[in-house]
Image (cartoon, rainbow, N blue to C red; front, side):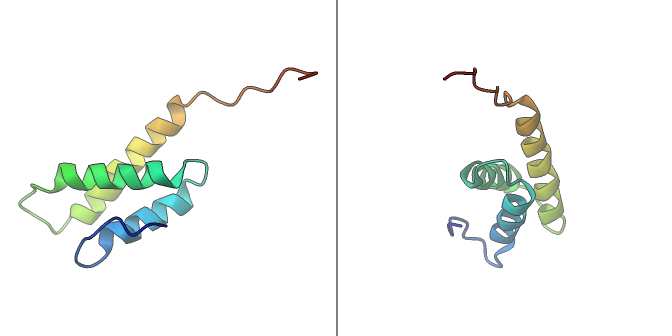
Length: 80
């Protein structure tokens, strides 16, 4: 796991680590990029108390949508 998040208390890195474990079927870089994007979207919020909860919810929704829209691996044709 890369240390690409530089938040003061490690909250975003901890969130990324938890989500990587919760979504093992999604590449860790995609999960980390999702957390990074969500944190940027919420960075202008005035009330910071609930940001970790909001960030996690938004990241999980994004990852669930990503998972749902991915084409499933189709079985390879026999004989190839």
